[in-house]
Image (tube, rainbow over all chains, first blue to last red):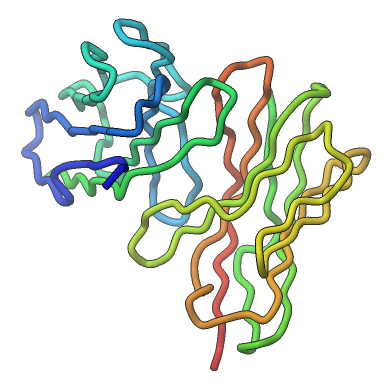
Length: 112
Length: 115
């Protein structure tokens, strides 16, 4: 099946620890994105990548880092510098930068 | 910077009836795209409908249609023959063709379809 997968579905982290969220797509899409959603709110863009080995900061990039070594993969690391990391994280991809974005199922991150 | 406003935090509708969700946006651009996404309790974002700003014809997808008023910067979603499975959060989103792939989302409208 073609689609976007995110793992794990639920993730728990202790304060001070870095954690990496996985996002993989087999749609042959060039562009990939990471969004954060807080309860009762819309999505905010963290990082995006239009092509392999290139990525750009979104509106709320502080405390996060990404890499894009392969077209299919766009992992997000939540570092200890992120002050309030508990949230729902959604990954998306699109054919190119002007096309519709399609979303993965999300990862719920909770900091204990 | 673009902003997207959804003025109805919550709405409800009886099954089989029609409901309209409102969305307004603010931009100085002429070329852009507008979207409605649905987020059911599973929390996955599902594309409902897409509208290109240069197209005058309103987009439709089965029971879902939009009323796109470019001059008024309004983009409402009409759901006809509402079904229980339509219960979800609905988000309006804006994408500026000149700013690459930045999607700006509204705050969402929670829709409850009642049997």
